[in-house]
Image (cartoon, rainbow, N blue to C red; front, side, top):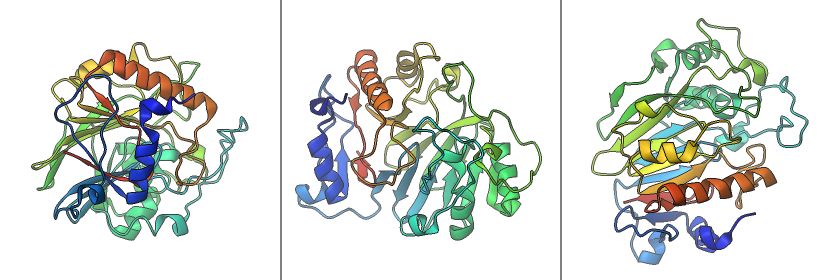
Length: 325
């Protein structure tokens, strides 16, 4: 079960209602919850050019850097596949819900895709077509984008190691790994090395290799983003982010997941657990969490506090604009 005292849940609910929260990455003290203060509570207006991070469930984020917007794994349609009820149907038709997406996505400059499973890629082609955003991802993401009718000039294939300069911010691409299930395997493995037919069902979207990203904002924080709960330690050396968005592990198949990750990232000042919510329910607070995922979230938080006691743990709410200082 959740320990509400550890998460300071009431404070985060207040912040979600106000719509903005500031989290300091300085003056960290071991053991305490992340401090969050709303812009309204501090008596000031949002500063021009402020950087905000809004969680959209799973590993999805909206990042506003001044008047520029970056999306990571934006999956908003969130339809039922039976995954959380024990009746998983890999033939579930891919579904895009414009009435859900359009009010939340008014613009986007770049869409960063960690991998191409449906709960990460499903809405990407629609959002890219609607906004003209560039899609950054694996070669599989590139070919799936073509299959959806996106022009090649709007698709940026990457492998890991690239550092992309967008002026106000840079995006470093990190070759990463997908998490393993209880059988030490994964759902829908595979890649697309050429343009396939347009995908119609969730099993048409394979993992397609996995990436992580680190965004460094000019004059602001460096933030690391995962889309799955595994990684290659050697690829993380030297990143040392201020903030790490860490995927909750669904199984214990990956050995020493949290201690190795915290050490490889040089013990981030703030750790934000992601990919722990039921992503087949609407994006409304409080996030819906399956009982097993509640325990896994508890375990993740306990493991972070043990392996990296000076890191603050922030359990996010949907849509809240967090400002990491």
